[in-house]
Length: 144
Image (cartoon, rainbow, N blue to C red; front, side):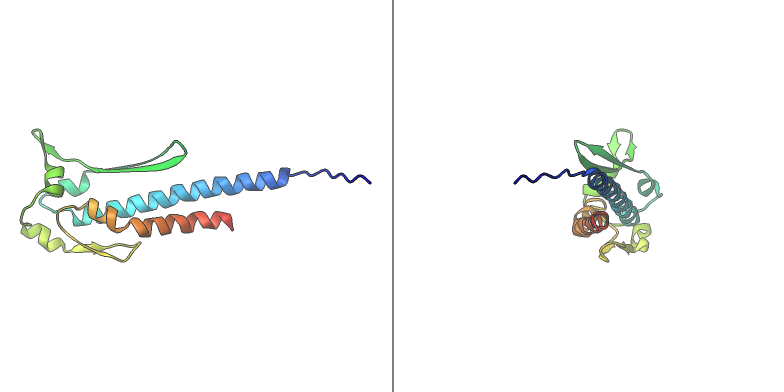
């Protein structure tokens, strides 16, 4: 006795490709959401004198080698002096304008952040788990 069957998996393959595309799009959306939130937090907790630093940010999200990479930067230089780096890394007393800013709360994690040094690295580190959860949630929607 012989048994043979022809399977046409074209529809199945098409659906898998659609799921993959939607998952990639959702991962990109989640990454952009995370970058925007970290930038918002960092801008709101950057020490303030004239507002130049908090407006100097740049952001970029790229696909490279099958992954997503985000870049966030603040850049203010005055005569070769990297003001943005010094304010991020330096030890100093906050001026009255900075103290009056108060700080902010994350929309992803609910954590609070005060104005001061490490204005970019603190939200990157503090939001890492909330960012992972946010992106995973969006990607999982494509898998349902």
